[in-house]
Image 1 (cartoon, rainbow, N blue to C red):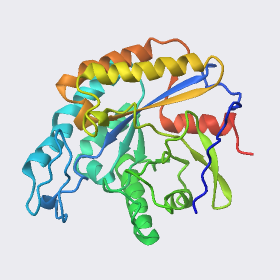
Image 2 (image 1 turned 30 degrees about the vertical axis):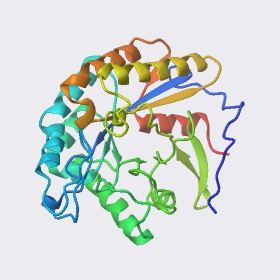
Image 3 (image 1 turned 90 degrees about the horizontal axis):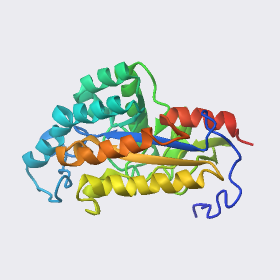
Image 4 (image 1 turned 90 degrees about the vertical axis):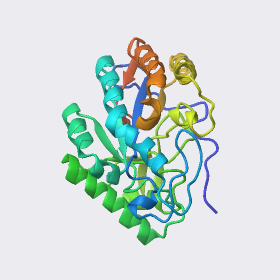
Length: 296
């Protein structure tokens, strides 16, 4: 049986401050997966079934889905990054390494901008059914490829969908500073792994543009902006009494469509104009937490 913690910090979270002296940290994560998805045309046994609609083409290359994913690197990436540059806010890239290999200009541009490259495995695939040996190969291939393309080894890890029962042990073994494979808190926390404390930075699926595709909860760009701003404002109010962290998930093929960009702009402006907020890359959040709230 897998041990689960239903209590967490409860009513006594750590009494800490982020580097700006405030209690609220915000992290934007831009997922870059295009070119790492399943595609028979790339030699896979099946096609990815999800883009603006959900329809799986079986047995032959899916040229429609492939074209949707190509929009991301041809057009949407530049549009999204222009908005982050305009707002002056930092971002973490959560990259599948094969996607970065197929669009190396994104690696070059990200290095120039000083972004963090976090590892999202080599392929855009789930790990829960992998054997430990298979998973170790995927983790190493992903990390080594990012190192080769950017000059830096990634410090953070995030699995698509559910991690396996071995993922965290293997990630810690391979020297990652933190992982994002949890959705159960508004603050980082430690878990014992391989006999040592390991740092977890919980991620979010609700303040995430994938809800344009997965559940169609978001239709207009303002739907995403309004929901995420509500979460931001609520956590900002709670942070008066206790530290908080908000993760905001973006995908270039989703948020980068022209009809959704006004929502992204509204959100970025709301965050940058709010007082007492520390907007940071995830590696900086991890490093500060390790210093301000060291493991026991």
